[in-house]
Image 1 (spheres, rainbow, N blue to C red):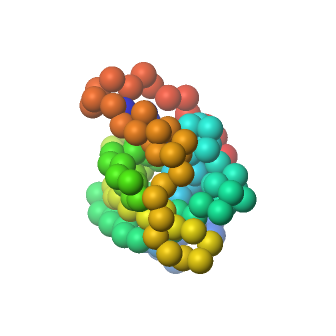
Image 2 (tube, helix red, strand yellow):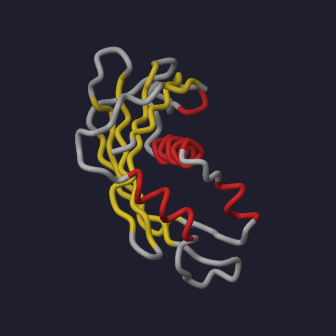
Length: 148
């Protein structure tokens, strides 16, 4: 399974008054991991949109495991776990860089549609790239950590 790893430091504006990462920010971390994985597959969102293929998020789930704090280093791991003709699911883990414990985990489902917002079959090249990213568990070589 292809795994994209993105290493970064929590910025001040991403934390709440208590110094913890605000719950809403984890979805932004997921998006950053997802777009990085797509770029690694040679399919940037910008190029897809230029071609009239949109992938809006239709479902999202998030579970908190341990709080992350301002200025802490985190790593987001992103995987493609399911691909159909018009949908794709990504799973995520946000890890504390020091120690590797899970801060949060979750998933998103994206649906393929055209500029008119109507569902349509996924771009064949994109679908092939995403399907190639879904391999037997445990076959992934460690992906490089990308820093922001």
